[in-house]
Length: 447
Image 1 (tube, helix red, strand yellow):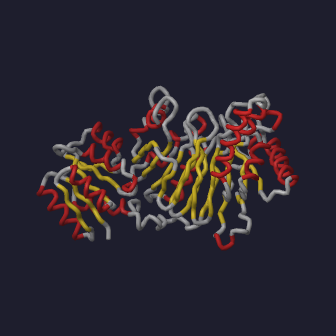
Image 2 (image 1 turned 60 degrees about the vertical axis):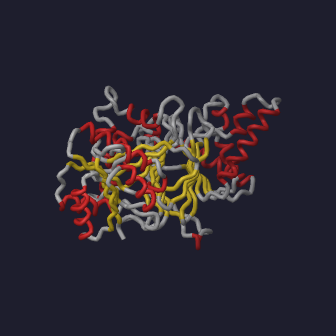
Image 3 (image 1 turned 90 degrees about the vertical axis):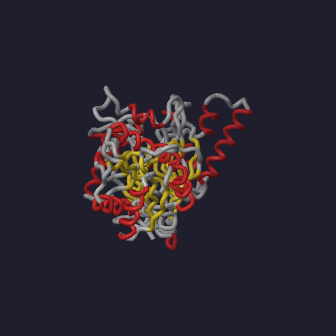
């Protein structure tokens, strides 16, 4: 049964709106003030919350912030209503967590149509496992950007690609985007073409806010369509909060359109825990060895798990090469941190990991926070990873160099009698994880 909670201090509005929605198949809950609305929302987890902006004691902004702080209400959609149509009120409502903003009086047809359009992306916890329209029930992965540091277009990078970090995962009816480098622009074009006029409900997971991981966001077409929703999740940065960093890169004089001005509903949430869910997809995060606040993610789907560490320097490689061999305490700390990462990755079906340098290059980049190929292969073998994709290709590495690194990695695996498939991430390549019943069969990468 689809459920709507109406929070409004106008008794006549509650009565008329409640009756209208009941006639269209909605179960209605009614609250005459914000605090009571919050209590009912937490108790019943309605799919839609229709909330008035101007109420005594607890206004609509406060209701939005309180509900968005509750993990159990992540899938509920909030529609703020108001008799005023100030742009500042609208922007503040979206910033507080509203999904839509309607100016009263709202025509009955408009309201019913809007709520019907939202219901597909407002799944209750029991419904969350139902895939969205047009999405496969299998787990699919596609690389949209594989380069590190800066985009590198040109004849030498045609095969592996020159766009910066961006990976798309479709699983359990969810579209999850890993990082927002320049590859995000291409993904946005594909989504708009594929889904046409359908509303998109997307989740963007950011590992950190270094520029090569966020610079595609201003050029992501879905945020310029009002029907779409984008939830951005990440952790607070070293100096500024996530919201501040992402909105600042789209402020004048850097960009003509502010993130808060785009038509789509863009919501930014700072994660506090290292374990959370995106619909039925369970996600675990682990701090990476990289400057600032940087994490890697592991997503658990019905077809297997995918780990994403685009920026990471293996601890044991850094300590061993940095001249600290005589410092047993340093080595012991490195071993313990490496052991934690191995445990985090153990048994991963697909590992996408920073492998920027070969052994000789790494000598000049120790402590920069990026991986040495040899150490990454060792880590994957120790964690019993099934498939490794070399990632965050160096801007100075052309296709031939990356091919040589793949060959070297495969040689290392063979020398150790390992059971690990190694490939280099390639822009445009796709991967479908096999069903668990045939998990032993290799998954094919296609263009």
